[in-house]
Amino acid sequence: MDKKIIAITFVLFTILVIIFAINSINIKSVEKNPDYYSWTKAVCDETSCQDYIIECRGKNVVRQTPITGAVIQKYENWTDPRNETEQNKICGD
Image 1 (spheres, rainbow, N blue to C red):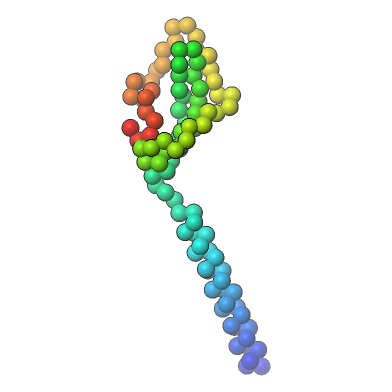
Image 2: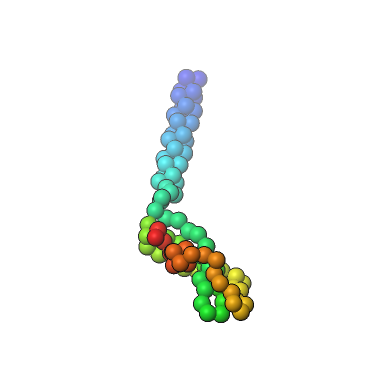
């Protein structure tokens, strides 16, 4: 009887150790990087504006992805309401 209890306790303890080890590996692999962030930005030319997802790591652009279907044609005499700093801002400016 005592050997059964010891064996069951050992098996349960081993399972717990394995679960904690796997959990620890998963937590380390998905740590948040505070320097990585993303946001959307409208990039305009003379005739239209296209929305992009801008992905940044610190002040460096990782990727700029156009958002499908997020394009507008500018009408005559349209002015961008954003100031020049906001219009030109990409990552961490």
